[in-house]
Image 1 (cartoon, rainbow, N blue to C red):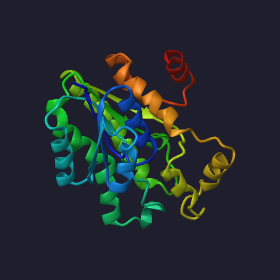
Image 2: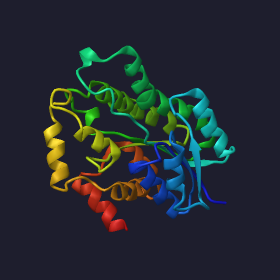
Image 3: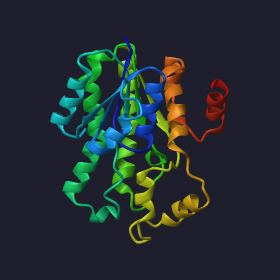
Amino acid sequence: MAELAVVTGAGTGIGRALAHALAERGLNVVAVGRRAAALAETCSAHPERMRAVSADVSDPEGRGRIVAATAGAPVRCLVHNAGVLEPIGPLMEVGLGEWRRAQAINVEAPLFLSQALLGQLSGGRILHLSSGAAHHPYSGWGSYCTGKAALYMLYQVLREELGRQGVAVGSLRPGVVDTPMQGLIRQQTPERFPEVERFLELHARGRLERPEQVAGFASWLLLDVDAGEFAAGEWSFTDAGHRRRWEHSV
């Protein structure tokens, strides 16, 4: 029987590419997202190994649907990829409702989905998709930076607590990747996001990472790297040493 992977945010970008990569490595994949049409497109690449679950990861009912889709099977990989950049703009203008919505997706969902699947994760791995924004403040991204910083601390605490239970917890910074989120960034005005010009230039110069490359690296982390090393520190796809190790392994 093929082992199971659960990937959130699997409708587009890194999530879609990673769902494909894990299916190609022989895992059955529960592909999670909010948009049914996008998930159907994701799963069409490997229909025999992929199952779409349209669910809001920030909602307890949505997380319940994800758990139900696993049918109690052992989960080898749980990937927390779903995340939102908005609200964009000065923190002093952020409303309480939009703040809570962002934190529910970016922070609460990874924690409580991990809780819900913990009984099926013995010997498995959890991967958090991190960001440079977890470690560097960006004007206009206050909600996102705060959420990613909290997710980074969540990873560090969980690796200590769950490592004792045989579950390895890792974190990956993918770099600046050609995803729909990057499209949203490039639409911003300098008033809402002062560093927008940098991202426009990266796109114009063809300097964005490809989701498929990041997914290949992530699948290597999840399936090939020693569990202790996987959890020991945050991985970066743009780190030359990390990347060389992966490239030499494939």
